[in-house]
Length: 494
Image (cartoon, rainbow, N blue to C red; front, side, top):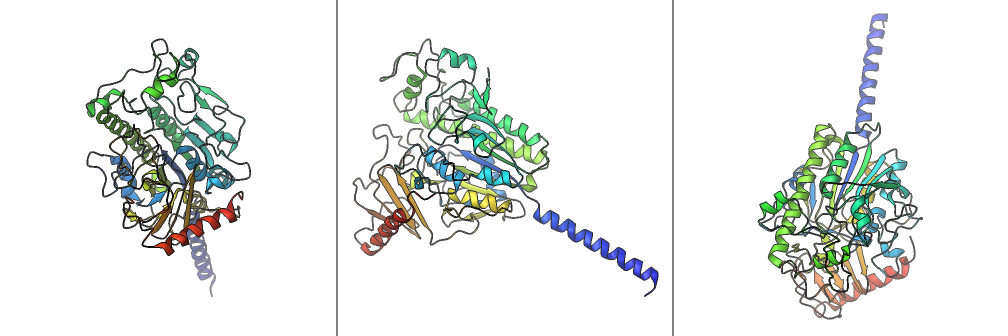
């Protein structure tokens, strides 16, 4: 072989190796990850679902469906925010460590969160919005504070809810009770301090801060949790242009000097204002639905702004997005969960089956509909796997969202209620709906109002109207045993 031919072959080999290296790098590049968590969105209030309510328009949530996959049978691990978010962030049934299956599971030191896994994998991490795990609210040196479970940056609040408008230090000083578990107002927490806003609307502010974060050069892939408190109470607080769109009159904001007493709440207290407007009475049912639609429309517009920013920054092609509601739509906000029974606060399908979508260009086929059942617990293993990280914990209840197991066991415990699903069947002792006497007529009431065991085929009967307990006693016993054995084998192990 002459020298010229040798040099040509060597050059060709170097080009080939270089090309292979580049391809390998591209294929193994870690995606940016955006986790969008919304609050109390109704199952029928998600336009990508085929049977959404006709008055619903969520064009920006639709963009996630058009570019990715929606899940028609996605479950949260609890019917209220605090335990549901604990489960989502750990990939584990939160009642593993919360024996009372309560509102306040917290985060155990021994259990790693999504942010901790991704931070160890080289991600920069940020959480903007609500951080609610049911305990240690308004505190910095606790496990539940985002900086203490894997986030590099935090801007938001730790509570069930926050006033949408009143975000200033001045208002907090004037209010006798600014730091309630739900009735909460004043400046937002920023890292280990506070950030006061004299003007602005909290949904817009969270979006502004998220976009600013996306525009910041990080040098590493990012994990951003954008956790809106919309569409939670106080649902009537919405910018005027959205109230105009849905033809509903505004309600005055809280003012401590003029707030009268309400129930057993003291005059001037923010809790009196919050309690007054988080129930039917002060707001009629028709207007409550309009406020909800206005709030949801504002939320959808803000999600659109974030998606636009990703595209403008050239990040959209390598960003994995997960969108999920933290629990079913609330019976107190006029959310609609049809065809599902009941809503938030219950283990009926309306309390735990939620809107969910995932988008990952080039990895997930656009426009896909997944009808097999999955869980919000699956978000952690899905994101961690996408980042190329192995789960180090020997106990993990979540699995991949992209490989649903249709024989898996899902269990729920909530106060005195429990439920279990395996395959197409669900067994529950659920018999009541929280908030009787003030439930919006948007909610489909349960028809089985006793504490007997009830068995449903939720594939065929998502509204849980046909109780199969008497006709299928063997299936009932099978699922009851599955649930009881799970408790024996797993309680206290986390």
